[in-house]
Length: 459
Ligand code: UDX
Ligand code: ADP
Image (tube, protein in one colour):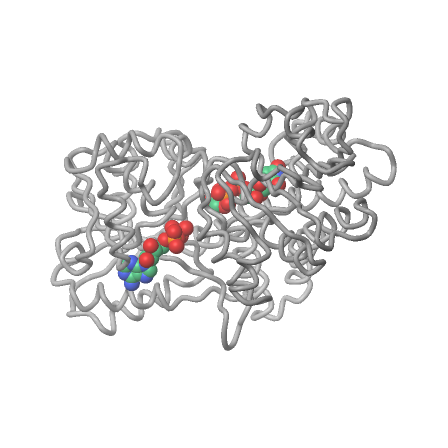
């Protein structure tokens, strides 16, 4: 089987960058990315590449190279499915907000809709690839829908989980640690191996059975999140004992068995994957009656929730036990630097806790829009949209955010924050001028000697 035409359903943070790189690396394959969100597709097609709906360093250059050549963005989902021999499903799989498994299980309604649409349109054999993060055995659901509602054509289902991290997606896609492909049909697996082999060394392309592939994705994210929660647990102990969490991380990270990555203490992990995938793992374990397994992984999330709450509590406590009516400037809203994605960002929960204490918040983030900040707060449902707009201001100049602020809280590790004129910032703040560094970003800026009351996680 040689793949000539790929369709990807879902033009989001996963589908957009991944398919752009496949198109860039495989000029002989036509790649069409479709989405029901017409606004999003229009943004992907915009002449001005700074307007792409996903901000990722290097993505604009990849899109510029391939778009219009063999990379297309469209809202015509059916036409793209009909023309493709391989279909990637990259739609969103949020945590359920209703019914059984509410707050835990993945909501698979978008996946099911895709499967039904593929089955309805396909008139020839197709390879269907799960790209979205999914619970184990979702392929079973896909298989059942495709075979029961289809036109009698053949479907092969593959699992090909995405391991890219936002902010470094293009580099991760160009040089992946590994590509994982799970499947039952050897020819279908080989067809996808051949796509990646255009630029990924063969020994980095791992093949497994379907269920191992699905479970590996959840496991990888659970292990990564667990490291962050582990170092965050130690950060609290550091604050009590006089140890410094960065020094502890360096000391343990030089043990080659532990390794140096993912040991940066922070205000808490965010992003669309970690929490969702662990909740999924917990839900699946519990549904098999594996209560100890479920409880074990649940603690990774409990620790993360504690870290976010603790950061907000420390702010209140340090500011004489009240932030009521005080202005607190947030530097950063995205869940990490170099992305405009705010899903599950710690900033949202810290803001909510401080708003409960009647603080006024001013947000500056280099890539996040005011509408997004308000949408994130409104989504919590803890106060009315009107109130959120009254209590929270979003500005486009960091110095405006800091002007007459009682405190600054660093929520995202954007590099530009280190380059600010911190003397100027202090001069315009209320005194004493507090900085709460949730990312341990400004240690090199010597803020105490400028006159700030400087608090960093884990010191
Ligand atoms: C993650 C996985 O890394 C990726 O393989 C998977 O495909 C999707 O989920 P992503 O969510 O984009 O990627 O970002 P990641 O770099 O993993 O960071 C997740 C969160 O953990 C961020 O909020 C980040 O700030 C935080 N983090 C990460 C820490 O607080 N400390 C660290 O040492 C590392
Ligand atoms: P991810 O981070 O997994 O890429 P996103 O939410 O960024 O998630 O992107 C998922 C995209 O999938 C959204 O743009 C959404 O509009 C699209 N989508 C969801 N369901 C369908 C569907 N049935 N057909 C086409 N696109 C869909």
